[in-house]
Length: 360
Image 1 (cartoon, one colour):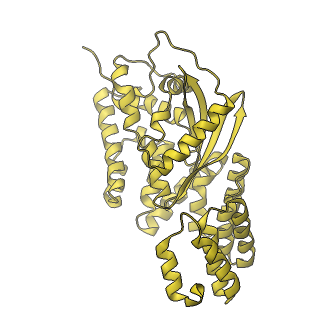
Image 2 (image 1 turned 180 degrees about the horizontal axis):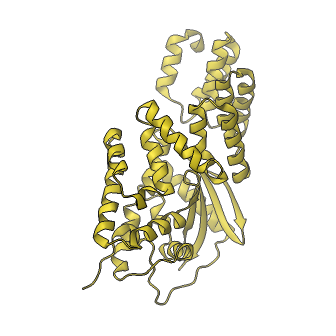
Image 3 (image 1 turned 180 degrees about the vertical axis):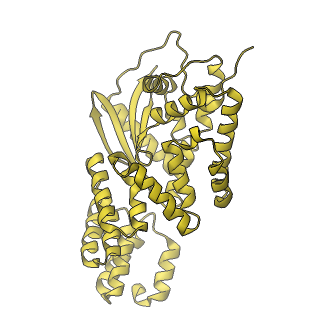
């Protein structure tokens, strides 16, 4: 009897017959790819990332990560696995209504073109470092490093697939996958209490993974502060020494009010990306919380120069100068904020109601 591959594990297998070879992407194709991605994010394209993944290329990289045992029936599951992933939803969940999805830089590593995109919005910050390839004249994503998880999706999927196929029956593996998906559905409905209960019931071989640890932190951040603090401490003990996970450590240090460690994590993250001036905004927020508003203002001003279309820095500067009763600078940065395409009209109305001089 033919064994049908369940979707998540199906992602990692590749039809071996007559594979076409990957081709190097040109600089012009990289430029077009960047424009398409940024435009697609603005239009809320539902398959922004999944439609650009080159399945053969990603699977090749997964098979290099782990010694995964192949099983029959893979063709039925591969595309379903991609469609059922949260790669696209995670982008829009992060940026929310008024956030952004923007290129930070493009570069070459070992002769391969890569692009780093920044996602920022209502639900935080993340970076995606995409390895590009071309297969049968289609330019797309061969692999992708997420700075939240601190690893390539090829490694994440290969690790999960190994755990789900190594000594685990297909029925048990499918039960674990269904339970994992149920946790994420509860999170989407903002039922975090039940999501935590179901997460804690996941089998150990699935729960003891990096992607599950990060999911647990995301759930706990919406629960009781004591629960969140406990899970953050566990996360710190397990991952604090890993440079690639510093983005996930920042929130932990802010909860602990350890602002120096938070700044250090920002600096490590910045060095890994090889400089994103946008991170000065985060430095400003942390320094302000530390009780050094004048130094924070310098960071916010730097952001208005390096990222002039970003509204957050103008908002922070407006608020600061209001606290200093500096009407001239308050109006200066408020007027600049109002001219931005993504300015929040509700925020503008609120400020003008509370501080009428801003309308003068």
